[in-house]
Amino acid sequence: MTTKKTRKLKLYGFNNLTKTLSFNMYDVCYATSEEQQEQYIAYIDEMYNAERLTETLCEVSDIIGAHVLNIAAQDYDPQGASVTMLIAEGHPGIAKEDVVAHLDKSHITVHTYPERHPQRGVCTFRADIDVSTCGEISPLKALNFLLKRFAPDIAIMDYRVRGFTRDVNGKKIYIDHRMQAISHYIEAALRNRYNIVDVNMYQENIFHCKMMVKDFDLDDYLFDQTRADLSASAAQKVRRQLRQEMTEIYYGRNLPAIKGV
Image (cartoon, rainbow, N blue to C red):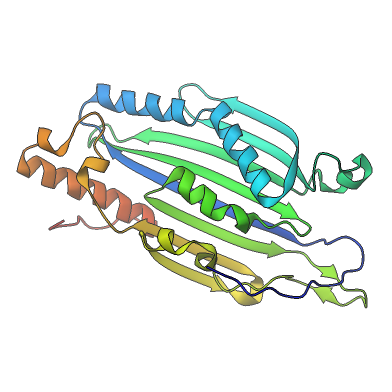
């Protein structure tokens, strides 16, 4: 998707606007036995451990044009991981005095939450990623990368521009770029995979988007087994449970039992 180039604003000194993208994703899976559920959690914990998440966030930093200043990473027992990065606009050659103002303002964080429903066999993996920047760099540049890297079943995103900067005449500027909806920054091939809803508060510079995959191939959601391992009735039951889980996460509330899926 091409975007119209806009004339750069002439600012008075530093750009004090803070732009934050909160990326909340879910992966849903079905594991029949307690042993399979534990194996799924172990698999997710290894796939998204602190070391691998750090590599992902470093790529995010490169994409948005930021320089990593500091990294704190932690794996948890029994499961989950967190990574926090302080970043600055620019490159490794940037002068130290130029990055001091960024230290408490620009950062990237990720927290993971693998969990299971032992009575029903449904397992979910949630990752929360926040990319908060100041200056001209934009976290929206990393959106397509994150969607491709995690390939979530459900993604819930918020983008907010806070504070203000000034032009050379002292006039306050509360947003320095054109913005209609988060989904406008998502590549067409990715958008076509999802049902998407945008909800925006333009007067507050707050933008919300949520997405859920359209297609539902049961084999993509079974851990350590295939559709052929299940009877027709069992496959139908698992499909309903998975769709119920995804729909409730998408709408953020418990819903009546889904039928006929």
